Amino acid sequence: MGRKAVSKLFYYLSILLTGLLSIITLAGALSSFVSPTQCIILAFIGLAMPVLLLLNAGLIIYWCMRCRIWLLLPFIAILGNWGYMSRVLRFSNPNVSKSTLIVSTYNVDGFNRDLTGYTCKEIARYMKNEQVDILCIQEFAAVKEFSIDSIKAAFSAWHYVAIPQPTDGKAILQVAVFSKYPILHTHLVTYPDSKNCSMWCDLDINGQNIRIFNNHLQTTEVSSNKVRLEKELHTENITGTEYATLQLAKGLKENFIKRATQAEHMQKLIAASPYPTLVCGDFNSLPSSYTYHIMKGTKLSDGFLSAGHGYMYTFRYFKKLLRIDYIFHSKEFKVEDYVSPYLDYSDHKPVMMKVELTADIH
Image (cartoon, rainbow, N blue to C red; front, side, top):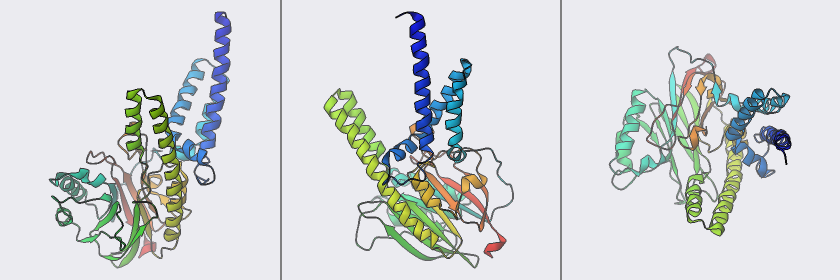
């Protein structure tokens, strides 16, 4: 086969791959609206959205260099996912007026199982310096050497604490709320066949009640399965590698469905809230996901869309592509700023939102 024929073949293959990638990427835009129980393939495409968009951007550059009209295909694919893009990239500037309330959510990864309490104390010190009023923690965990009482002492700047315990003795990945305002009521929400959980509590903010939901939805378990897969790859055991890959895919599928079910349950509780509402936590889901769409619902707004700026990710690994921690708010809150500062005390970064209580809330 001559050089000209090879070049022509490569050209047509490039068009075919561009078209296929564009179609797959456009299909991913539907992942927010279709439950994994109905179409699991869309859930996987939604999970791959950051990589798909980067590949499409690369194809735009490639076809620009070749001055071909095919650049329109990846351009349309990216444009079709503008909703996702706007949830991880914002160009607005933060407001500078004085905020009434600073809320933060942070998956602390069990305080790194630190026996000395150093990690816990550093997180508490940082949050205190940032004047956080309400702190929602996921994967709250104590160890024998640094007990719950020691953790409470580290967070003594927050006089009100809610660490709900399951009444049936079930082992859970605990959640907690630390507040400078009185906590009136607390309720723990556990899920079947899962260690993950959520909670809600009502707070008295200068005479006005608000309800805050603290969520830790189904863990992905990708990290542990990834380690297993890498181990099998190093052993060059084909059977073991195939099994590890299948287990990874199976685990992702099961957890997609669990998170969707958990989100649907929580959305009903959120919709029933009688007070101005904040919904926060580790959703273990991208903004392209069904879980994100259901948790936000129609009455809540994403704080990042309200006042975020720059590029947003909250999981420190996987090439900084994953935004999976959120704070949503009802219309009674005016968001002044929304950031995710870089801290290395956990595999997650905290999310912090500054809000003003509007006239409608008083």
